[in-house]
Amino acid sequence: MGLKIAFQMDPIGSVNINADSTFRIAEEAQARGHELFYYTPDRLAFREGRVIARGWPLTVRRMQGDHFTLGEEQEVDLADWDVVWLRQDPPFDMAYITTTHLLEMIHPGTLVVNDPFWVRNSPEKLLVLRFADLTPPTAIARDLATIRDFKQAHGDVILKPLYGNGGAGVFRLDPNDRNLAALHELFTGFSREPLIVQKFLPAVSKGDKRVILVDGEPVGAINRVPAEGETRSNMHVGGRPEKVALTDRDREICATIGPVLREKGQIFVGIDVIGDYLTEINVTSPTGIQELERFDGINVAARIWEAIEAKRA
Image (cartoon, rainbow, N blue to C red; front, side):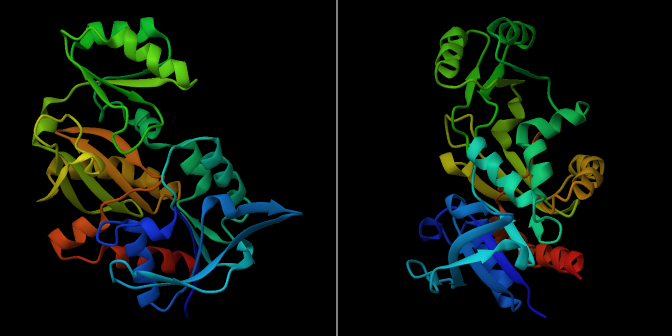
């Protein structure tokens, strides 16, 4: 029997159908006979005890420039749906956090993927702190003296916003750099959030590996190689995806964190591994499905739906 699936996501008209993971998940759901509904996060609301969304029935197709059709706009009670996908991109700000609170009210009667309570409490750069033996030396602070002491101890570091995404605002500060105070002033001038600083890993020149886990189990990986002269490997900023195999160290990392992800209802997760180190656990809106499917010839989206269908059963 088909499921009723709602997608809370950024505007569908602008997605890249050859790279966007949400599009691929919707495409696979449709192929499996599920009913699709789409709405943007600003159309989610709470009214008199009900969590509602104003959106549209959705049909998708793999035709660039003509990749979706919307039905007539309607208001739905999300408690009547089988699955809601929490798939808008960060920033992980109060608007994002509010949507997790609202969706938590209908979960698990309606299965929200990923579990909104743990998405809110385990964002990318914070959940990794539970696994200090797997991660590079890290500090989270707003205080300049603390960050300066960390840089003095480790010399070559990466400084970035704690709740950033897509490689935005990521700076490498080598031992000769004199910009730490100026960058701190810049960041703290427009945000009250702390910064995260990590020891720089030279192995990033060989790539930043994205490992996809489904319900706590690794299904494969892609390597993202930085562009010439660039520290960041994110595909948003020119990183080049390459085929890569899982190493023994990758599997060791997954075996350690997988049970935690499964326990916390994080069905679709993308972790970042540089060399032998885990750097991020992406639970808000992970990407990489389509690249992995092309490289390895596997149907990752089907694996995700098999996990969801089993939970709904």
